[in-house]
Length: 181
Image 1 (cartoon, one colour):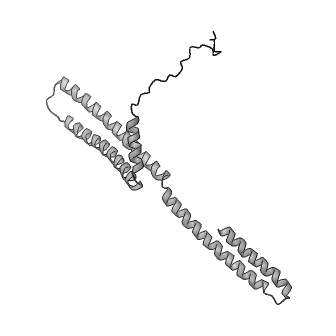
Image 2 (image 1 turned 135 degrees about the horizontal axis):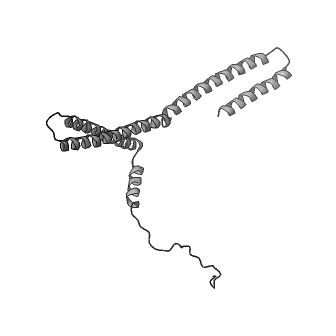
Image 3 (image 1 turned 45 degrees about the vertical axis):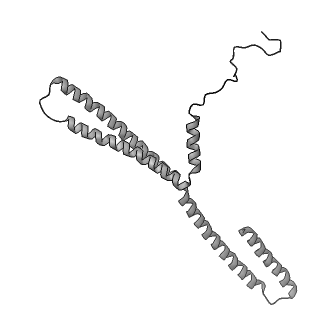
């Protein structure tokens, strides 16, 4: 059925002008603002501290689990209920230790990837140094070629042949300077 305005009536819901919820936006905006105000060194220090906290918490879980497992392994007079209770406790501790170990493995994998993929500063520095070296070698080769060309062109011939050649050698130097810029 079509309404009188020519727009068909449908069952599709239409967005309304109701106010939207602003649940976690303020926290996210505060974090983004704090990141924006930090300089690079502070930001890297904060990330390093975060990684250290993650590693420390997982290692603490492993240490506490080992201490509990050693404590549970005591030999003595125990009834069946106590043995079953300790077995369950040991199993749950072992599972939490496995989760912590997997988390540490994931952290090391992430850190390896970060090292491999974000070591751009050293790569860029090496690339720039190599580029500078190649440009210096190129400029030295151009100077040698220009000197050899000048020597070849300074033959005892007539003045007419020397002028066009001198212009050609000067043109070559101009082209070299334009290419190096």
